Image (spheres, one colour):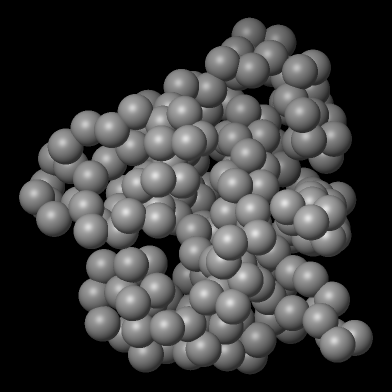
Length: 207
């Protein structure tokens, strides 16, 4: 089990920077995001939705939307990356990840809105997910993508992931990366504190 204090989600927010130094806020999804999150997925291109969910959907089905909003349930977490656009907080990217404690792995998937691709958002979000993986005690993080998704394949390769065949579906490829960061060296302030707290509560825990 993680030691995150989910009664105060804001403490796990991070401010990242896009390629042009624009502020990018990464935070856990909240109930107030329901409509905006659904709007985000509806406004993705057909190809982007297909790449994200490996199938043709026009919006999040009710059950999946519910799952996205249940932060921490069964060690599954959803985050949104937001920017101020015309005075409004706007979702420009999202990620969902799950800790598999029995194998010390973190599984994740992410998307960036078509309008905001090419600004370094995916790279920044990927690095932030590595911080979160390290803080939760994961020793590896991995994701799956369609072999035809050249953008995600390129991002994973540039981010230092190794590629292996997917165990169940030939249309997919799996990318995996070892997480070898000590709590004190995690380069995201909020997640460094979370990792140090976890270590203090369980001195034998390794990251």
